[in-house]
Length: 208
Ligand SMILES: [Zn+2]
Image (cartoon, rainbow, N blue to C red):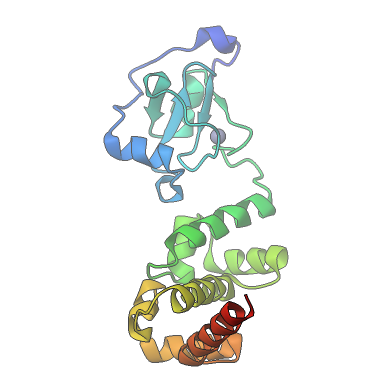
């Protein structure tokens, strides 16, 4: 039986809590979604527990205790955070999609597949694909491509890195595929895009 009638004064710190390792503390500080469902953290001063990815203010480390699952956090009389909803009760689609886009924004330089993304974000690839498209109007894969092309544009304008290096920097080891994708999305090859932006820069410099 869950004993939830004790209120905030009845928090019991039982043997269910784990040591807070540096790795877990880093995950909390960085709101690292990859650690979701691996552990939960509770904050003694507020009586609330969260997922590692929670965006709420980073608590004082001394107030934090770690639980391997939500049941044990509830049993110790912590309440689930309203913001990150650690028990996953009807997480609205839009919030789920936000978590997915945040993960992509942080990890687009890595290899990302629909499967690995779905795995990390706790849904089936099909459900994720559909929900993402419903909320954002584009698929997760299209979103990843968009983030990569935008990052590549920055590199092309701001650096002299060779195209092949830029491809790797934006998570696409296959340079010819990168060039094809870039052209499809922008209408120009990366080399053309770089030249055009250089010309534009010169033009703007001459105007001044
Ligand atoms: Zn939270």
